[in-house]
Each structure stands twice: as structure tokens, then as C-alpha cells.
Image (cartoon, rainbow, N blue to C red; front, side, top):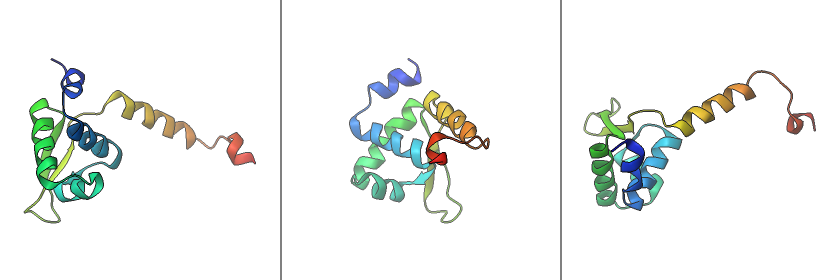
Length: 100
């Protein structure tokens, strides 16, 4: 089973945690609780499921070694598309919205 199949079978809370990590980057469990407005227990369960799936990696949070930092284990296609789009916007070309 690949990563996309695994993600599709996860509960909605795990999908929300995944999306928050995708948009906001590496976060601690406490930060995820604040961003998702889910309970700490729900976020912890979602992170466990995402780690089992191989979608999220746990790292060291150097600002406070008592906490872990969670980040996506690999870039998803939508992230790559966003990065390509961002690069084209920074090339100095004038866009219609900029010209107005």
C-alpha cells in the first residue's frame, strides 16, 4: 500500500493534522493542538497513525528538548506544484494584478 492509499484510510483528524503540517511546516504536538483545535489526545493519536503510515517523522525540538517536532516525511506532489508556482512569481515578471 502506498502513501496515498494509507492517507485515504486515515480518520479525519489525522488528515487535518497532515494538512496543517503540509501548510505550516514542522510543528510540536502543542502547536498542532493550537492550530487544529483538536484535543491533545486526538492529535497524539493522529500523529501515531501518520507515523505508522510513514507520512510523518518525529524529530528533536531544539528550543525545548522535552517536546518533539513533527514534519512530513517527504514532499507531496501538491507541495512541489506550489513551489514551482512560487518560483515563477518571483522571477520579476509583471502580473496583471501587479500592473493595476
